[in-house]
Image 1: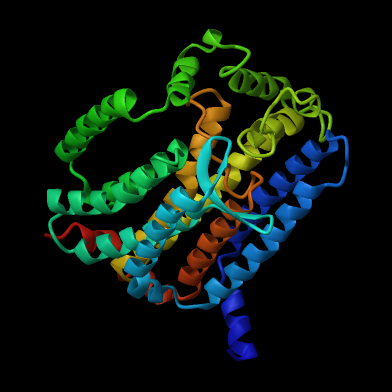
Image 2: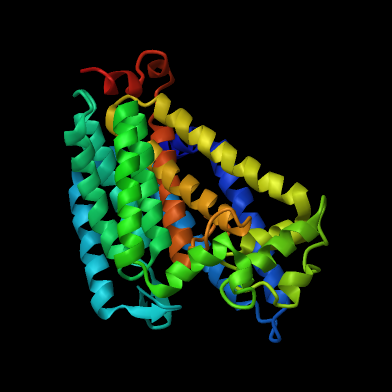
Amino acid sequence: MSLARFFRQLQRLDWILLLAVLVLFGFGMAAIYSVELSRESAEFLLLRKQGIAFAIGIVLLVVSAGANYLQLRNYGRLLYLIGIGLMVLVLIFGSTIRGTTGWFVLFGVSFQPVEFMKLALAVELARYFGEHARRQFGWREIFGSGLLTCVPVFLTAIQPDLGSAMLMLGMWGLLVFFAGLRLRQGAILAIVVIAIAIFGWFFLLQPYQKQRVEVFLDPSLDPLEKGYNVTQSRIAIGSGQLFGRGLGFGSQSQLKFLPESQTDFVFAVIAEELGFFGVMIIFFAIGVFMYRSITLSRHARDNFTGFLAIALSASVFVQAMVNIGVNLALLPATGVALPFVSYGGSSLVFSLLMVGILESIAVRERPADIAEKKWYTTSREG
């Protein structure tokens, strides 16, 4: 690539989307720094590891933004099969961390295959919906895409990692909606989901997962164990008030009342130390990210591009809403990270890779085409 071409592509990046991501990452590093202050040995190991993951993710972002994202359409099925293979292998050879067999650990470096699977599923579903967009959207397309989704969802659920399984289902649900789901089809699917949930409650969920749901409905059932995390999260969020207690001065995080404060409950740390003002910046950055991503989808020149932008943004949005919902005690605890904010190398690297693909779409979008073609109009043609 010539230097002139490189600078032209640099100018065509969606800098607003990238700025929203950097704001989220910055808040995450501030929260991790604060959590590290409460540790006896202030070596800031987590902060350094997150910085290394960010550097790797930025390299992948730049490379993927410079590459032609349309090539993913040709390799969607291969990526999907590789993801399925990794999900099977991790069940056999993976390490168990906090009760979930979902990590490969080599030379002290951990890798979570489900993060790769989320990306691979997004690409494969975009390819599938892109190929079927010109047809009348019916049950065949619903079941076909649903089968593609259910295989990794099942492999994830038996790790067990119910949170990541829910995220993939949420991504599929949003794609089906944008593909042209009818009201009657939606009602039938809702009934099926309820039936599956009932079946899963009696035959699939582990006892500790059932306890999470029961305690979510009534935290007083186990206030010192299963209900402890959510209770402390609510206290932390409530004590932040308008501008917070100040970075490094949150009682819940600094005195270690709030467990998993750098991962699952990093939102509560931000709410306590930076207050309502900090929380609103987080919501605003997520909103900007979604707006710019959906704009890329609406202006896409082909169906694959439109669905790919929706799939990638849906993956980030659903994950963010689930994490925040858990912190606010609106959802049962699932162990889901806050994208770009929570500590976690695999999650951060693959999230930045998704941003790189979105930037590749932005770089290759011709402004003249915006008013001429809308991907969603062709998706509804029979």
